[in-house]
Length: 378
Ligand SMILES: NC(=O)c1ccc[n+]([C@@H]2O[C@H](COP(=O)([O-])OP(=O)(O)OC[C@H]3O[C@@H](n4cnc5c(N)ncnc54)[C@H](O)[C@@H]3O)[C@@H](O)[C@H]2O)c1
Image (cartoon, rainbow, N blue to C red; front, side, top):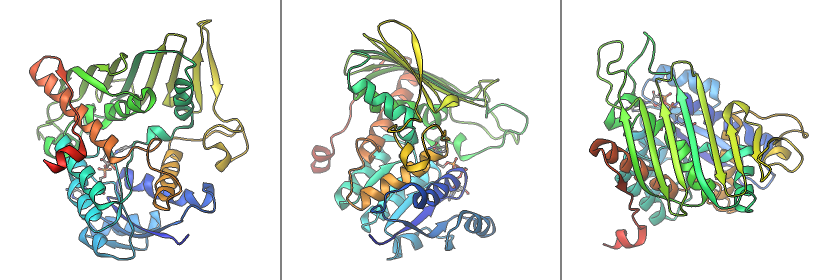
């Protein structure tokens, strides 16, 4: 298998983690997975871009993202830019026949995400949305336990994603504060992970949502308005009858990053916290939680890394993601169900939009998902 040329948009937080993920492919992937060639990275500021190029290991830079689309040596476009910048370059890339890998949420709105899914499907390219929680070994195991029926019929999904990034005197305005650029705040940035994860773990989609959002810190340090939510709380009703409660905050004073989920069923429960990401807590009918260290021989992803017993980290999910999209491009497996396809990305955006409507209207909102084939033909 020849190398896959990659072009990347954005060199901020996710630009760095995705670059680290590609670096790890050589270390953890089977021989048949194509190796990434880090061809060109895009950004607006040539000086900062050059620093990123050198430290992240890219060959060249461009301040015009069309260069990535026009380059015949690039087969995969990795979009790690702000949410609104996901849309046009990703659609252009798909139309040019390039495979597309895009950060979450897929778009700033469901309409944008739907257009991206449609473009990728019409072009017949591989598409993956970067919901990296699907690539935590413990959550892979959790899905297996749920699917094997070990905790019975699922009644509850519960999650909290809490940070304190909106608090403090140095609060700088960011694209995350703009409705046009981000779509939503804590809901789109944080809760989106847990909403997608609920669909992955429960294999069921929310059919309705009752939500509340608040902007608690209304201005940045320079006085510019913050438009997107700092607080989100949502109650979801899933197609399989489960109830979900998802909370997200950027104003949770004592929390750097707290991200935890619980699933309760008729025969038992599962609990995961990102702060103990190599562990899964599982309780059976005896109602006693036991901690499983998910670093044993045969646990997801372990064999690619180290002998059993050596823990992995948060950033390693990006290596797992990189291996997954490159393997999909090579035809070794499909993106779904373990990776989030653009269909999954669109579904999450539809749920986010419904939650925003619910919060704005102060009432429960039914969630309708669009069908690609029917709507494309209409
Ligand atoms: N999977 C995860 O765990 C995770 C974590 C954080 C962010 N994200 C997602 O990754 C994406 C990027 O987030 P980030 O934290 O890396 O953001 P960031 O602000 O750190 O980086 C964004 C990059 O885009 C550039 N940029 C900003 N505005 C631009 C514009 N108008 N035109 C062109 N370039 C622009 C910035 O210079 C920077 O290189 C977002 O979609 C976000 O939701 C995912």
